[in-house]
Image (tube, rainbow, N blue to C red):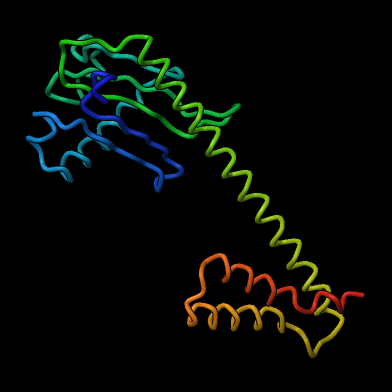
Length: 196
């Protein structure tokens, strides 16, 4: 934050709030406010400010020069944000806020911010893709298990019950997350040979 001449940096992803971040530069301004109060105030500020952006990025070097942004804070501030976007999908905003009016945000800081935003967007898109692939695999396996159980009324729901009991036993034994995942898959698939 010091190199970017900012008091705070934020990552605001409305559809993925668990990834939202707010970091503060340790200076007189941030020390003068309690961290939780400052964090809430900055999240509110960032979400209101980003709603006013009509392009893929925004640089305001003096909030007093822009009526819409002046209304957000009694103190003059500098603000810069860029979209976290991958292909045509927009995830949210990465931005900086500063209450020190001696410096200015330049295209150099914007370039750095946009590079970071592009990397974040690519990571999020990859995670989305991975989750889609995982859901597809689970649905495919469940379809196979259901096909087996449809042939045998006695076995209906058997694989699901074995899966649930195996998960309970694995958790009780304190298995690692990786081992527990393997156990669940094995329990679900243990009768797959019957499909022949």
